[in-house]
Image 1: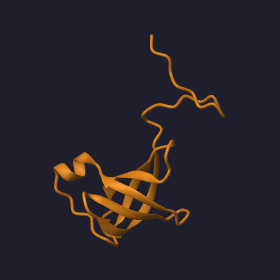
Image 2: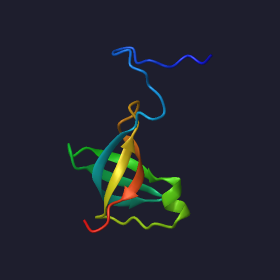
Image 3: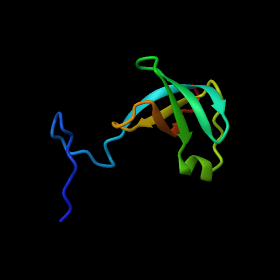
Length: 88
């Protein structure tokens, strides 16, 4: 049987599905499908990359676009753009 990983502080189960989803605005496009994204909740800047489905379907993300970013609980400075919010 596989033992679940637990956080030392809270002893909660940490698995792949515990990503934090936040809204943000793309500030700058970097080489290699990387973007600087400013989070709307707390004005932090993170470096985010495009999720595979966005690249697969050739969704363009430009500076000024509103996006949904998934952050890992382990590193809150890097994220993955999983959705481009239309019309905002």
